[in-house]
Image (cartoon, rainbow, N blue to C red):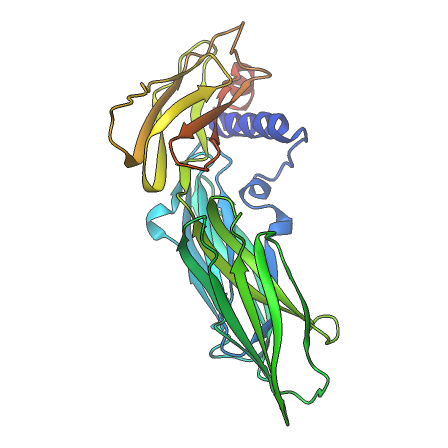
Length: 357
């Protein structure tokens, strides 16, 4: 019970420091919040296989093991990396679920059951739904621009075919959760029992470096609930850098005891050099010397540890330390990337209260 107590202290303090809010008592709420456990694909064109990603995170100090993920319906496929099923503190686990519009039709509902067996046994249920329509086809059913140089403006064309009974059916607008995606609607043809629209989709030349994982919605003049057709859009613009883990947990330490040395992995889609590393906490030691003569690499390993002073500059606040580390590279047009380092201070009073005999 002592270790679980430490875990909840760390969660509560980190959550309150990061959000200003008090955490819920159910630790599973911090693995994936309740509001993120359901997804509605809405209208799915026949032949389409739209996907959604559920992201789980380990909020505990102990490793969390995901034993299995299953679906209640064969109308879905579920993908996840079994080699990454053991999550260290703050590491993420991505579950990708696809609705099989190429094999099924009509209203579809499925429940995904996530089984956790360490450090405690628990289950999380994730829900998806959608309506697969036989009178609607979109080709291709998603767009992947691939790797794009920032100065280019790639474009793709969607062909939407409607074979329903509504002679006035049409695509009237589009909306997207990414402001750099541009669209142009063209009414291509109309025949008896069939209407064809083409939608040109492009990336604006000012699109910043980074990965795009967005949804474009084709808006029709149908009734609510059938009006929007979601289309998945992906791209990697320019050279992209990422840090793993995005939050590096150094452990739960006794007061004043330095942390063990841990490592952040900085990766890019092309070789690059790190030109500057800055941290807003002077007690966080980053063992990294900038070498202007070093060759570019696609992967850099950054050693980090925390001196854990009892008081003074850089000491923990309210039992937790949360520091921001900013990395600057020689990648043209790429803004500095920030990741976080955190740790918690062990509470002896808590240990004495909850230790089992």
